[in-house]
Length: 219
Image (cartoon, rainbow, N blue to C red; front, top):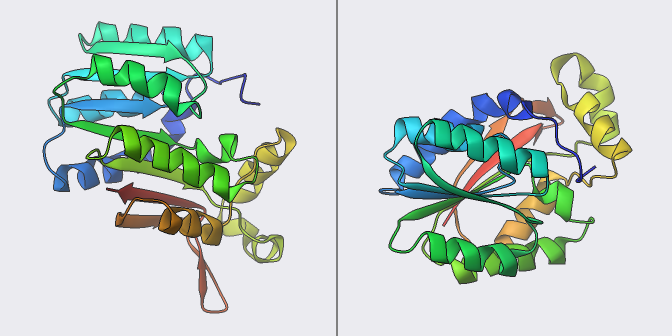
């Protein structure tokens, strides 16, 4: 559940990071990062290797992650502030981030967070995104999310995707993985515009595409 975090889980996300970093580079110079659900800081560290990053502001709901990610960033001499906070509480973390990141060109990343905080409510996530946009109107936003694929499609393609196991795990822990249609609708109704969208592990079924994961770059 959201109160527990398996350190090292970010290693499974490395293949997405390169695409996110390339997308951010196309949008102009980035000097700092807000990483909501920072985990073990893998994305922040990888981004800092590709860009000159002055500061990292991280948020996580796991005290272990807060401690370990801050320690990892300090080892690399990256100035950082990582706080224990519910990532869905934008008002709380955004004010602290604004003070810490004054005069910085900030990017924001959300790695597999939306399904943790959605409670299966599109309106809740739209409001969540719009609050981020309010506090950081000029900051690009990276969103990477699992996609809920219909069970009848998965049953025919289970040899070609890892998503059945992922979806089972998330169902057992009461996390609401959204469909691609839901994710696209949420972003369309938010105040963000899609700059790029990348699908991973696509399944083709009756002229439809069902990705196991989607990476959005918004601005």
